[in-house]
Image (cartoon, rainbow, N blue to C red; front, side, top):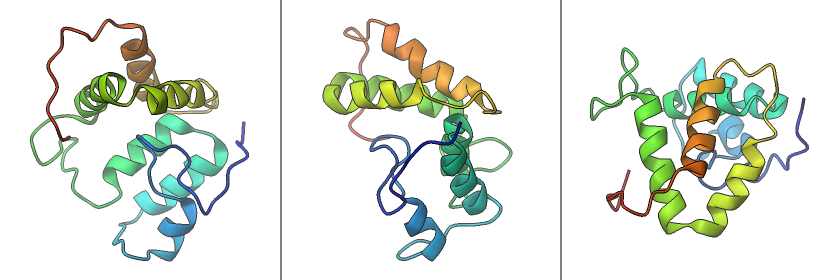
Length: 132
């Protein structure tokens, strides 16, 4: 299911903060392949878990499935989701509604599952850091 998006704007403010146009042009960015193309195609196709997965890889800082701090992408998505839910409630609600529309063709549905699980979770007692 392709989503109707404005390619000059970020598809979603929290996890998909790069516009398709910005990735294609590369203005101020140094995206790496194949992740830049994967990001663009996934956004255009509505495969939102795939888009988030590509977004994490797009600058080449994921090695052997680990981020620079040693965490996995899913760990980072969960940590960011908790932070966003606690500190950006309006944007969080918009993001959850957006991610519920992911395509059934999404190959990284586990990313969306983490976001939707955090949405149902009581995060009031969880401490979050100021940055991701």
